[in-house]
Length: 368
Image (tube, rainbow, N blue to C red; front, side, top):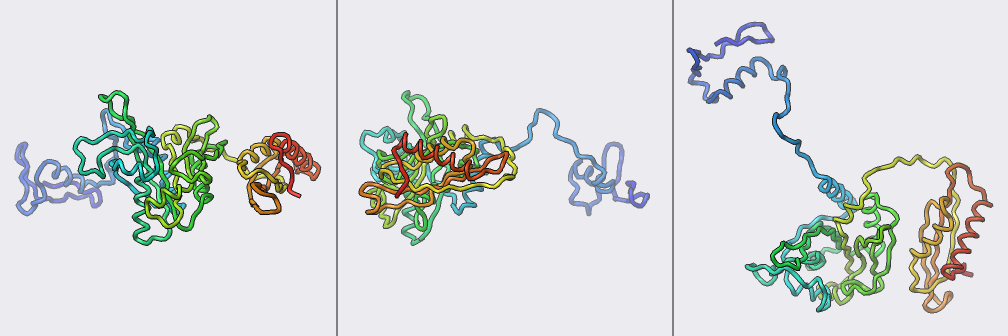
């Protein structure tokens, strides 16, 4: 059989013999076994570049990630970029793990789905919290003398249904675990980057003192503008750290991944660079030790209105100069107008309003 060659305009002998509806292949062409191979031989001579690509016919859809998978992939890139390593742990745990994280005997989290044929006691129940799995991994790294560890996991918890015939409710939880060269504020910074990725703003951080797994003075929860609690984070209770033979402070965060995904704001709005300069004002305020800085920031933001671009704490002082059970909180407020250059008089008006509301609502005055 001679096939037409588009390059040289001549016939190309391929050594095939055609009799009727049958094609006889030369014995040396062991690679030609079926009609598909013959079609490939024709296309090879004709030119692959001349064959137009076509889509698959029928009720087919293009394979791609779901919105949740795409969001999780972005979260993974962010956390890895911040220096965290991903882990994957088993959903089966031991009931003794609940004792190690300090859960009360009557805690609802102790009501777990029991495995009928477990491999052993250490894998006999389905976890209702991911915290023990993370802490076990941190403890293992401590035993291997790893000095600085920052881990994260997107795992599932299983909450038993009141009707035993129904499957348990499965929820996804983002868990962070850190120790070494880190502290409470470093963990908070990671979570703030996470909220920025999700496009979630207007959150408040509320002190938590009744969570048995966390230090009562170094724990907070993230509350969304809708009033929903997104998660809890902070330093683990010293007794919990002792249960894992940790000779250093352990930090963790438990974030509701499903709620984080549902409340995300996927729309990205472009904001041009400011045209007018900013003015900064510093405030050093004496307040009670148990007053949350977030409440001070909320009052200042409300007083400054649209002129407030940023409010940030840059120092907290405790000592005899401010008195017992008192602290001095220093905050920097950045003011900027979008349509004109602010004057000193404009800034002073905002400052007076801020001090007035701080005194009226929180009883705060400037440190002498």
